[in-house]
Image (cartoon, rainbow, N blue to C red; front, side):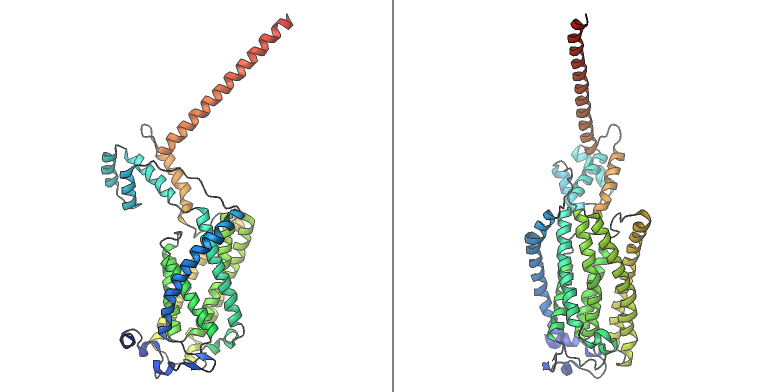
Length: 407
């Protein structure tokens, strides 16, 4: 199996510079560590499953009580009436259906298409994630990113390539791998595997596709950089990304808890750190080192273009997210507050849907929400009428009691 992988997947001519083979790096222990090999990446899959299990325990034992302590409250949503045919249609189609399908469904259910649309809106709102779920997810990522950044900084601050990026390529590819850098790589890669495996159950945000591209590009980039022994520059890439991620997750936590001032302050700090690290340090230092400085130490080979291409994909995503962040900073500076996260989850559209529900209710076709409002309004009117009648009766009794005295 290993020979087959080496022949088709781990081709030396593609992954390594000319004149270097996997046997040259497969020397076991060397002074100062050992050489990285592609088979080391197999440990990331069981570690990813371990991260998922640890996350479940963390969210139930730590994050959930913490959300209650911080005052996280969930929105109370009206539940759609239990209609088995509509439930089956929703589970099959969700939000992807044609107008003709609604007409056919209306005949079977005895409802109008407008009523079915309103029922589907209520049903979709039931599936929207609560603030507690979003808080638990953000707290899990916050804890990991904070620990990863602190551990990565402690492991790299004493290395020569942290201060001089030319050291990333001096002696390449025979660069020993320390145990701390090995585990830093494996744990980071395993964590991104766990994010990719849980993407279907996590809160779906407006930049869902960009997140998928980011996770895949990160996993491929980390796997390729480890196999080709680009570990030194790879650790710098991970440290740059972790430096701002924990700030974003902490701002989300305070946002879900309703701590607006703390959220706005953390978001401004995150925006500054993100713009500096992702638009200045990453392209001007890291990408410049891989594109230009590396040519002084090695001959260009196919893996050189693949590695730098993935880095440029990440940079394009950084530009996209920087645009969203700058929009929010504009709102903060000129409107006085951060109204909402531009890459927040799809629940932000719920208010718009509720407004559409009110506008869609026409005479003769009352919707579910309108029925509830009508019942509430009728009760308020009857209560007000009772209060008025009671006041009038009470005044008449007082007048009747005062008339004999006046006489």
